[in-house]
Image (cartoon, rainbow, N blue to C red):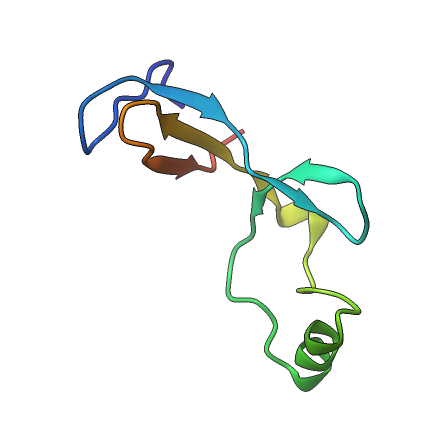
Length: 83
């Protein structure tokens, strides 16, 4: 991952950060990338609509996302760097 990221829209420096998300409760985590499409089987969508759960994921496949934000124009760029 680059040390300095330049905004592709206005060529200003971008700040690293993260997008918080929750995992089944009030605890906040950094968003992660997961390969493939989310489950679309009926049980998944029934759980999703009822608020009883989200996508089925393999925790071993998750890659933390680093998000860069341009302080000039506000553009967000998401990176899921290799380990």
